[in-house]
Amino acid sequence: MVGQGVLRECLSDPEIDRVLTIGRSATGQHHEKLRELVHGDLANLTAVEDQLRSYDACFFCLGVSSVSITEADYRRVTYDLALGAAKTLARLNPGMTFIYVSGAGTDSTERGRSMWARVKGETENALLRLPFKAAVMFRPGFIQPLHGIRSKTKFYQVFYTALGPLIPLLKAFAPNAVTTTEQVGRAMINVAKHGAPKPVLESRDINALQ
View (cartoon, rainbow, N blue to C red):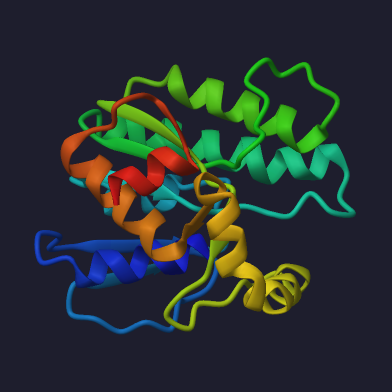
């Protein structure tokens, strides 16, 4: 869902002249500055390294729900895929800004009781140690999907649909805990262009940057 949002904002930004998406399937989007790389094994980018050079930023939006999944499987997607891609990109594009979509409540100590928060925290810490120009962790809370964007996770989409009428109230009572796919996308682009005030950004920081 976040990936759809940032892609939309990238394609509409006149200062961005080239966008590459990488995934196991095509996005279904068509645009003159968009190129899609469909690659079945995201854990191994060796075969496509020649197509990953000369980019200024990476917006890493790949993720999986921690509901009904083992820690080993969650770690394989959350930590292993992110670090594998990031290490390759840091080697190929040392001047790159790498932005990772994490989540509110992530545990930077890596010692908390929540499995997903520990793994996310470990992932963030490892990414921040890589030799990028900059690595920035986005920790949005509730994200409102806009412009027809839908979550690919059925449970989440049902949740968003059910909560839709209450979003104005949520924004009124907890404005710093709510953002939108548009705001996240614009904030990512802003960070890629101008940098971030700090390496870990919560929802209120994200909203201030869009």
